[in-house]
Amino acid sequence: VQLQASGGGLVQPGGSLSLSCAASGFYLGDYAIGWFRQVPGKEREGVSCIGRSDGSTYYADSVKGRFTISRDNAKNTVYLQMNSLKPEDTAVYYCAANLMRSTATTPLIYEYGYWGQGTLVTVSS
Image (cartoon, rainbow, N blue to C red; front, side, top):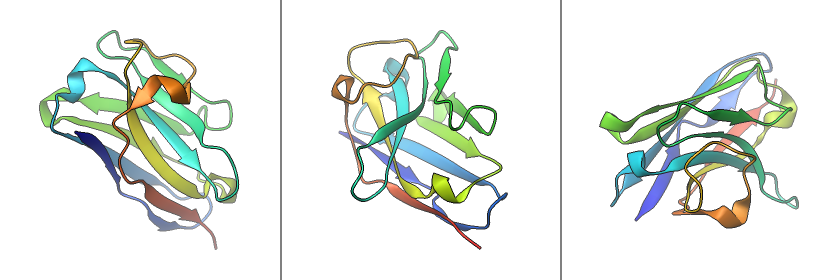
């Protein structure tokens, strides 16, 4: 039972990437899903989340207006569209399921589970 993030890569500043978060072993539609990112030596931070079924979304101030989260429960997948990327967006990106809440709120790591391996996003010229 885990979530697997994919879609990372190297992109120039100002470019775009689309990340996918696929569930295995459970139905992703039963959970609010969050995206997090982590830079070596720093704490993992919440980037965005999407509610289970109410359409609610949350974005960190650092990505608001540039990132868009969406979900396709039929495909058991959540997406993170990242536009206007900046070098400071460079990180390993993870997705996880909120085991305590069903709506999108400020991501608190202790509420999340089913972590999988992340995907590396590098923004550099």
